Image: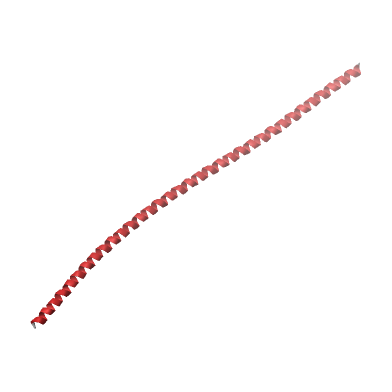
Length: 126
């Protein structure tokens, strides 16, 4: 009977050792899992921060591109306005030049006509 009690005690001690060993493995695995989770969480946080920074940079670039496009559009509009104004001034100058030429031609024709009348009158008088 003593042998049976010793065997049972040995078996219980062995079971307790296995339980302790399993508990130590569980604690070790739990620590490893916690560390892995912490690393994963940290990496995810870093990735989120990097993604947010990248999104901010892209937004700033988009805003800068829009501002440049607006400035370019305004410059084109100003250039087109100046071109229209110059075309209008050119047309006005051309009309004025034509009017002055016509007036000058009319004045010369009128003056020549007067001279011709005077000559004709002088010829009649003689």
